[in-house]
Length: 268
Image 1 (tube, helix red, strand yellow):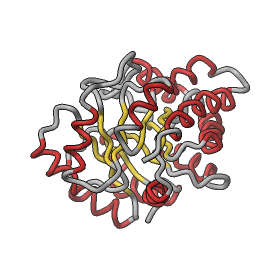
Image 2: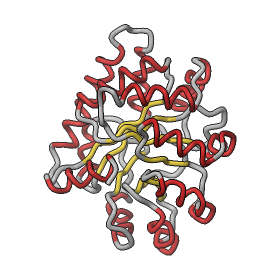
Image 3: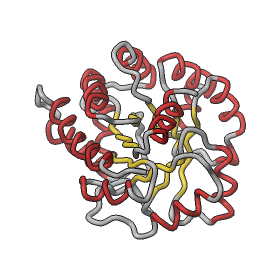
Image 4: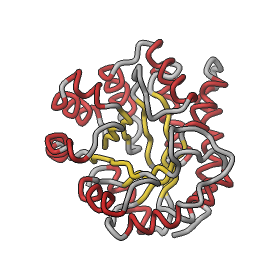
């Protein structure tokens, strides 16, 4: 088991729900990313997703697009992210997933990217625009390095395609609860319960639900219908608001702690 699998196994044994937090790597700079990662661990986050800055983040709404832009402006590259993760690993064993677009793997070389990610202490990759049908070599390289390939399922994904996607995934399945791009929403999707039930017919992996969850009430509600809750834009928005504050990591950690506590109040 890698760290993701171990964490979800522990959550299951303790009848607890998981919390997955997303931030943009290098937003506003990598030193802040490292400090925020440690604050996330202290706040009780179970899995940390680091978005790798990319010029054309097509799956992301404006909040995360701007985070990617700030990451690019701070000079963040995959190699620098790997170095930052190596430094995080000196102090924390929080499971880390890279949220990344395939162009970056292709540019660096897929084998080299996966090798360097594993060596740095990454536990999984969520490649937004890599369909399972094109992932054979990617999956074999990932499994050789004991990394989890995370795949997405959307509200529009038919049951037959869920059946085809599920065997390719490891660690957890990420259910995108809304059509469209990432972003904060005022309400929770009404299809979560029925879709998670459909996914469970085809996979025994934990199901993490994200896209649109922005406050403790929503997080608590979604936790009751899933194995884990993913919050991204609401956290990234906090980073945007307090990016120049020397207490940035602490403020983000305090915000996230409220969301974690809401999720942990729900028992499996």
